Each structure stands twice: as structure tokens, then as C-alpha cells.
Image 1 (cartoon, rainbow, N blue to C red):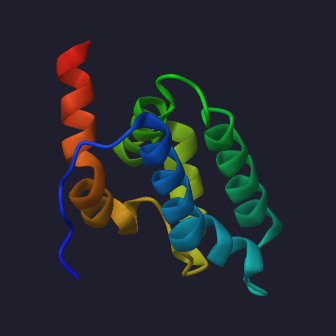
Image 2 (cartoon, helix red, strand yellow):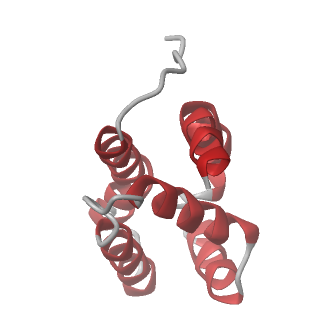
Length: 114
């Protein structure tokens, strides 16, 4: 299915981003019988932090920034990635291309307004 780039409202983008991350990263970890407590705790905490941005005027930009900060590799995010990789669980890093494909247009538009 082709992805059409359109200018959408802030709330719509926030909802799409969070739903995507839940479906492709958080929910598979949280529902996995093989995921460790560390993996599940990290997924819960990260999802909670992202949900805090929901319904904020610049929430989509903050979600996008949080995603890319995690991917760029803080010490904490690298440790979390190592846990997920060892346990063969989904991660932000595995979703880079699709995330960029879906929301880079929205992010670029917002950055130009700043």
C-alpha cells in the first residue's frame, strides 16, 4: 500500500505515531511470554513517556524527537536496544525506515515553522 504524504493536523499525527509504535514495538514486547522484566519495564516506561506528549500543541514533534533521540543512541537507549536485540524483540531501530517514510514529511514541515 503506497503511503501518501499529506499535511495533517497535529493531533491526527500524534495518534498515528503512537498507534504505530504501540503496534510495532511496545505491544509485541509487552505481550511476549519470552520478554524479560527489563524489556517489558523499558517498553512500559517509554510508552508512558510518549503518551505524556499526547494532546500537547507540539506533541507530534516531541514524539518524533523522542523517537530519533532513542535511535541516535543515548547510553540508556543503547542498553535497552541491547536487551531487545538479545531477546529478539522489536525495537525503534527496526522501525526507522517505515517511521521516516510515514512521518518525515510532517516533521520537515514542522521544523520549517520553528
